[in-house]
Structures are given as C-alpha cells and as structure tokens.
Image: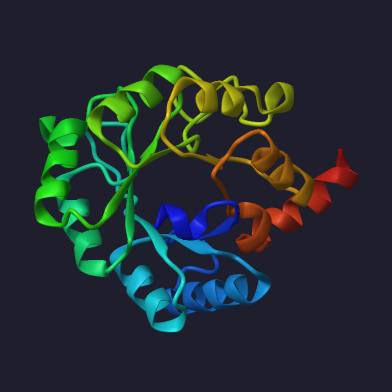
Length: 226
C-alpha cells in the first residue's frame, strides 16, 4: 500500500457517533468524492465504515478502530479485538496508537504487531506516534511506516502542533528513521500539504480540512468572532 499512496493525498473519512455525519453510507460517499478529487487513499474508522467505503471505491484504506477503555488513554486500535475487526474489514493497512502509554488489558504494542503479522502478513502496519522515541521504537518493532498523527495529542506533547516551526517535528522524524513517514495532524491548507511533501513526507493524511464540515464552518465563524 505504501507504494500506492507515495507522493499523494490520503483523505481521512471519519465521523464519531456523536457527530452529524456519522454514517457508513455518508463515509462511503465522502470517500468517493475524495477519489474523484484525486486522493490516492482513504483513512477510515470502524469495520463497518471500511466495508462500505471499499464497496464504493477501489482506493487502498488505512483502517483504525477508535474505542475508549477505562484502564488506558490509548484509543486508536488499542487491542487485539480491534485488530481482528480490521483484518475482517479488508483494509490494506492498519494504523495503531504506537505511543509509550500503557495499553488496555495489559496488552503490548509488540504483541499486537506480532499477532497481526501472524494472522495476515500482507496487511501493512502504520505506527501513529507522538515523539521521536516512539518513531524509533516503531521502526525496531517492524512497522511499515510511521505517522505523526498523535504529535500534540498525548499529555507529553500537548503543547505542540505538527506545523510548529515549519513542521519541525516532521523533519526530525524523517531524519530519525528509515521508514516512510506519513504527515498527519492539523494539515489545513493545500500549501501545508505541499510543504509536508517537500520536507520528505511519503504521503499526507488530511481529514478535518476536507471531511468535517462542522469544524470547517466553525473556523470561518471563529475567524470573524475573534
């Protein structure tokens, strides 16, 4: 899958159950619109959404399952349960929270990687990381790529944004690992997307700026009110 998305735009088509667009049908149509606009891949949440999307478009899908657990802050493909659902979905790549935080049920990231490799070696694995250390650990564990998805979204990186200082964190990750690096997180404009590629990102995932009209509307409204 990495070769299919290299140098291009992956559109994240997600809506949680409390959001206005929550619907597998709607996500499939967002994916179709993304394909017609030139996207090379889709990132999607839940087995049901992925199945609907794959019935609508032929683009490769990065699959995740977001699920909250009482004993852990990790919620992106946190346990083997989510891995099983994604393997059944037919997605070409699975993204996992690959931070150093404790996972639910005492499971470990290395356990999940080994489990997925055993169950279906053809499915590639993306590490959603927030620090350079986590990127290096992901490379040691044998991930196929790393993504900057969680930079700014863990307690120890919450004061940062991916685009700070001309995407400094992205540049550091590209230099720190030999794996393909996917840029993701608050990429809000075509210019930012282009800059990520210029700085060495193998691909860029954009979600909220394209597929979340509630947030897009709020940015317009807040720009005037502020």
